[in-house]
Amino acid sequence: AKDALADEFILKLDHGYDSPVGERGVTLSGGQRQRVAIARAILRDAPILLLDEATSALDAESETLVQTALERLMQGRTTIVIAHRLATVLKADRILVMDGGRIVEEGTHQSLVAKGGIYARLAKLQFETGASAFRGAAE
Image (cartoon, rainbow, N blue to C red):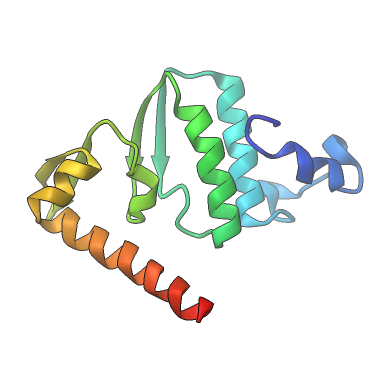
């Protein structure tokens, strides 16, 4: 739970690690459920990890915590990530870009941005939109 960054919120629950959380963790937030799932994956110690939109439904703070926990979990494992939020795959060794059910691009984040294709357009849209929103809020 500590490696998954779940220990802190678990200890704040009424009964700590013995707290009932309901079926499928219904009493937990999305980020808390994700971190419990990451803790379970750490315990399982599987050599292959499959993540399907691991951060898609999280607020910014939860996404940061989950992303940090995922980086720890992915070390030394083959990890397959299905993602629309490109922040999830920035550090990937290999990214496959699919369009219409076909692989249309392959490479690292840097090489795909340099190619100027679909991935580059998505990256520009996601990262520039986020940066401009941040700049606008700071002004």
